[in-house]
Length: 287
Image (tube, rainbow, N blue to C red; front, side, top):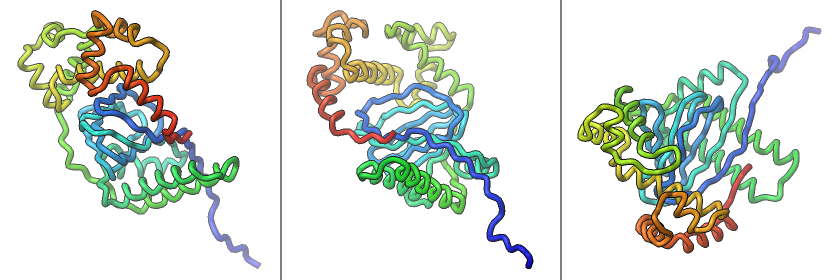
């Protein structure tokens, strides 16, 4: 009797790394990074602005983006609203599937009503639901893998995502990034934009125009965002006193730091620190 095969040999290697659900204040910034994994981001509230080489992407609530391996990216919350998003890193061993993901879905914003984004948000919700359940151990591992495979199934059947986002000449993006990098010394001391432009041998007017065109914000606004972001991180860590943080950030006194921080956030550093402690106790993380 002839053998009848129900399926051919299947080799499927998937690698799932820690995912996390994150809440961030306005002015949040995550520095430029580059890695060998796919990174899925689904935005639940607010919007995140992401720079990827010469590309600028804004991902709004309900949308999603799949960042491909080795793509440099830097993230900001310029919206002025609270930002909530889910971030998940993974890789796949199937070369054909990896190529399809990169070609059809890579580095473009999937609209909220697209099959790609809806599948990504279903996956996000399935992991949040799993975290809130009592499922643990091997059963939990299999549930995560099943949800991920359902996501890949939906993506493999979806149409390629087409973006209309504006891209910028590479020379402008490179200059804007050099200008941004030069705004602070290695020790965190802020420099004037005029000094940075002089170092790069460009006029202040031209540098300002290119910076605002690429980043969508003035150099002064960007520098304030960076300082505010660093101050929040230091306050959240909780290892240093407010006086020490003021000194580390090169303020002349704790009073001047507190005054500036209140302009940024609407609350004093001590009030902000208390708020973060309460939120950390109720925050949801997956990992």
